[in-house]
Image (tube, rainbow, N blue to C red; front, side, top):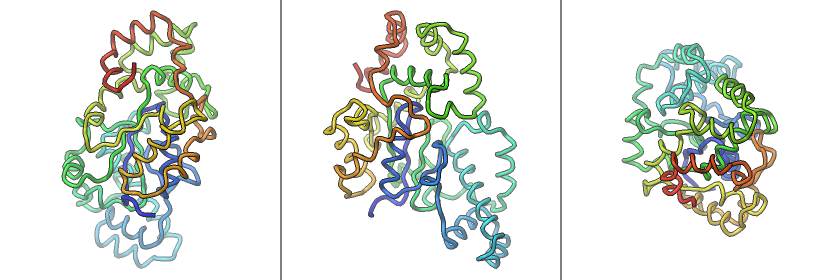
Length: 321
């Protein structure tokens, strides 16, 4: 299967990240980043790939010692640690919010494993082939400039922006934080905090009003931060409402067209018709109802007025009514 060796998806929270994951899995990629790891998604490397990963993380002497251990459990253990250190390293360079979600200690442990002083000078193209990095944000003011320079010069990795009607993301985030998805809201402490706040509100009107008013509410600023990607001609834009297809209340025509746009962007000549049916996965751990337009059942006139006042321009820029 021919396509870009690695790619990157920026999928807003509660905008159907599982849809993009299923599409990329169908293309043969394994997944790195925000989706919860699983048997189908976690990268698998042979000994040659493991050695190449370790070469990025370990100084030459340490790497030479490691090569002598090929075929042993120790080789597998050290290269697993090298891969973990490499992913943490790149997530930091990509400006991800790691400390408040995972704690500084975990980052320090990963950094202490690194002995190669040249790791910060490596390019994203040095990361392993066959991977799709899925993130919720790519804040241009937090990303390492060397990554931006590489992307500008090479248009690699192919960048895909996945988004959804902002009003639906508010409702979906509230459903998520109140534990209505199949496996709850995960184990980030920030989710615990907002879950308690929402539980203290008696009505949906109050919950939505709070979500719109609090600047720190999860995913509240994701649309504004991604405007540079929305307007950049080199970024492939995909809407949740198109990807869900007829099983989620959309249309087959729009679903196939959206899948085809992604395939062409990553350099694939695969058949979008054959792949589209397998994108909608109601078994994803964060899946709730998987439909569009639910905000109409939850927003009061007061909620809608506040939303329009605060985010009306964002709504227009993303092409929603």
